[in-house]
Length: 135
Image (cartoon, rainbow, N blue to C red; front, side, top):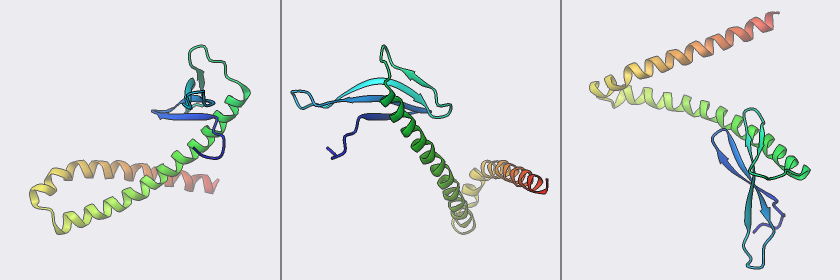
């Protein structure tokens, strides 16, 4: 185990995590995880699990995790967008150089609609930014 005393474990789930308090090693040298809460990343709601009573230390650990997790997810979203640009470039190369007419036909409509949707969202966002700068 690590040298720093970890007191909480967060099992990531859709939109949040289950929060476990790590019980100190018992006489059998087993680490016990006691589920104490569920935290929602989007709205910050913390719901105690069962009859668990959350201590100020629990709330502090959850708040710290929530801040780190939100930063992690934001960075991941930005990275996904950059990876998408790479994938679009690779797809353009594939269509131009290696795809058969039948292969290109299979993906054409789906890609065109997705790219048009993305284009509209980006143009709208850019227009809003320009309008805000001009105010």
